[in-house]
Length: 84
Image 1 (tube, helix red, strand yellow):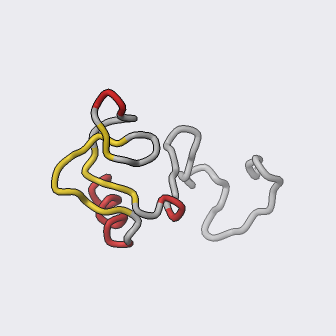
Image 2 (cartoon, rainbow, N blue to C red):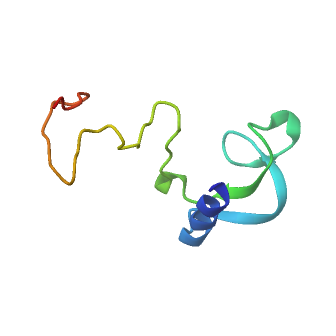
Image 3 (cartoon, rainbow, N blue to C red):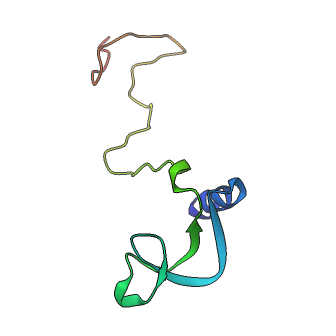
C-alpha cells in the first residue's frame, strides 16, 4: 500500500524520489543524523501544501456498520449513527 501511495505522490509531482536515502530536518532540508527529524527517506516533498494526510488513529473509513442498507439514505446529526 505504501509503495503505491508514494508512487502516486511522485507521479503527481507532490514529491520526488531520491537515488539514496537521506536524513531530513523539520524544515525539509537534508541534514546529518543528529539534526534529523524522523527516519531516513527516499522522498522529498516538493509541494507539501498539496499533501493530504490521514492518520489511521481516530479515522474510521469503514462503512460496515453505517446503517446504510442497499443504497437507502438516512439522515442523522453529526457524530451519530442511525438506529433502525
